[in-house]
Structures are given as C-alpha cells and as structure tokens.
View 1 (cartoon, one colour):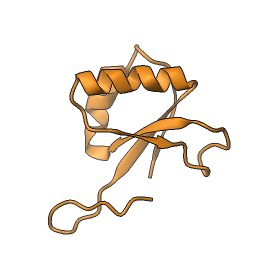
View 2 (cartoon, rainbow, N blue to C red):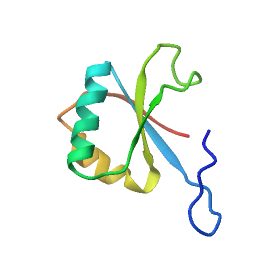
View 3 (spheres, rainbow, N blue to C red):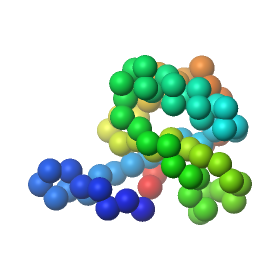
View 4 (cartoon, rainbow, N blue to C red):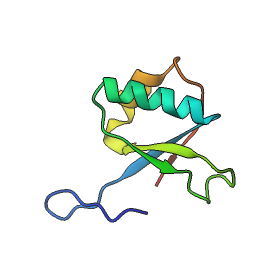
Length: 82
C-alpha cells in the first residue's frame, strides 16, 4: 500500500477500520481529530470490499487509542491490517 517510512527507514504498519456508512466514517473522523489521533481517510481497498467508500487508516500502534475513542459511538463494520 503505502511506502511511508519512519525515521531510520522502518516501514510503517497500518490498520484500517471500515464503517457501514460514509456518515459513520465522518463521525469517527471527527472524534479522532478531536482526540488528536493521527489518521488518514482513504478509499476502501478493493481486496477488502467491492463497495465504493472511504475508511480510516491509522498506525497499528494507535489501535487501542482509536478503539477507545470511537468504541460505542460509531458502528464498526470491520478492522483489517494493511
């Protein structure tokens, strides 16, 4: 997917969270922005879903913070590694 690297040349490891609706994704984005958790809105990768849509990509190390922030506030469809 992405060739982004950390200092020292280590490749970044990401997770993506998929939602049942675009509005759910945007609610989650607002929460993560408020909590100052790094994320990126990306198109849903084709190997995960054939539906058109967007999902949130975040660093694997932030998964606990992401789930704590959005858990119970937005209905999550699935979470995958990239």
